[in-house]
Each structure stands twice: as C-alpha cells, then as structure tokens.
Image (spheres, rainbow, N blue to C red):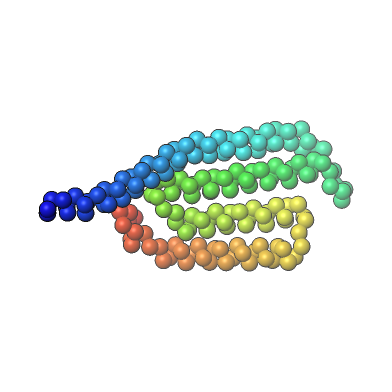
Length: 169
C-alpha cells in the first residue's frame, strides 16, 4: 500500500518535470531558429546601407546650396535613417542574444535599446529639419528620463539575487 502511494505522489511531479523539459526544449529550438533569421535581417539592413552609400557617392559633388530640398538630400537623409536602423537592430539582437544566453532580459538592455531608438528619432528629425519644438522637447525629455532610469538600473542591479547567475567581480 505504501508503494502505491509513493508512485501516485511522484506521477504529478514527473509530469510537471516533463512539461517543463518540453517547454525548455521548444524555447531552445525557437531561439536556434530565430538566430539565423536575425543574422539575415541584419545582413539585409547592412547591405541596404552599403548600397545606399555607393549610390550617394556620385551625387556628393552635385549638392546645391539653395533652400529647396533636392532628391539627393532626401536620399542622404534616407541613408542616415538606414544606418541608424542598423544600430537599432544590433541593439535589439544583443538584447535577444542576452536572453538566449541567460534566459532573462536585463532592464538595462531594454533601456539601452529604447535610448538608441529615441536618439535615432531625434537625429532623423534634426537632420531632416522637420520637427516642431514640442516634439523635439518631448523626445529629449524621454531620453533624459531613460538615461536616468538606465543609471538607476545599473546602480541597483539585482544580478547577485538571481539564482544560478555568476556575479561579476
């Protein structure tokens, strides 16, 4: 009778362990599938920036100094946006790779990504000279708040409280 009770108690625990193992393996397979996709996306973004740059080289000497916006200037602005997009993709993929390695996402990584994205928006608006003062002020306030939050997150990092995680010395 005692043996039957022991097997009944272990059965739900075994099922739970099996479900968690299956979940962990499924997540591992998905991560392994997403990594090549991320590399392909990064390669395409980088190649767009390189191709845009090579198309801009012959046009560099033809920029005019009048007040009208030429197609060359629009192309150069698009090139700047593409290069900044590559930087954002790199930050996004770094955050994902951190999750793939440690199975958790640090707040500081997400804040870094958000800061880079907000700075991209500011740079694009400033470079295009297409902004209102309230939009620019709002984006600057967002960046300041994010940088303060990033500083606080770095100061009060809880890495020592996370189990099975080495503490950097």
